[in-house]
Structure formats: C-alpha cells, structure tokens
Image (cartoon, rainbow, N blue to C red; front, top):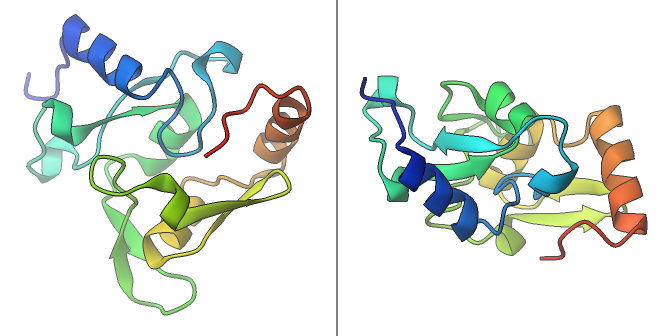
Length: 138
C-alpha cells in the first residue's frame, strides 16, 4: 500500500514534532486519540510516505484536512495550499489571540479555517491547557 507508514517513520515523525500536532500544536499527551502521521500531500495526489511529506497531526486536524491540499483564502478568495510544516515555520503563519489560533497569511487562514482550529470545544480545551502551562509556546 502506497500510504503505509512504517513504525520507524511514525516514531521519527512524532519525535521531530516533539509529540505535538504540527498544525494546531496540541500535545499528544493531552489528546483523546493518539496523533498520527499526516501525508502533507495526500497519496491520492501523488504524495509519498516519506519523512519530508509527513506531519505529526492530531486526530481532529488530520480528519478535517482529509485528502485536501488547500482551500480558498477567506480574505482574498484565491485558492491557497495549506500550511506545510516541512517547509514553513508555524510562528510566521499563525498567532495566538487568547486561546484561539489566528491565521495571519493566506496559508495560515485556509489551514485554520479548514482544520477548524477555533471550534468551541477545541478553544475550550486549548484554554485549559494554556492556563495549566501545558500547551507549547511558539
């Protein structure tokens, strides 16, 4: 199967991300479901199961992203690819406003929108983790 990720590659992906979702930054230790490797470019779009095409993603981010590669920027209306944690730095594309995560670039905006970073339950969870100093800073 082309999308199969070896145990070793899963471990390397998790370690590289410091066991936090590379999209919303949720630490795996506080997630209901285990984080998993996400194909940044999905296999069905020609993406490979290789280190430079894998991101460590929480269950929510990975499910909302699905096989998509981008969306329409809510500000410009232009089709824009999602934030790529292999080639971009999180802090240049997102910022915290309290417990919400705001996209500040086209990539950040489409990623925050489609991956639903700011759904009420996700913000509430993030707020508690931030208050307990258990959410990573960027």
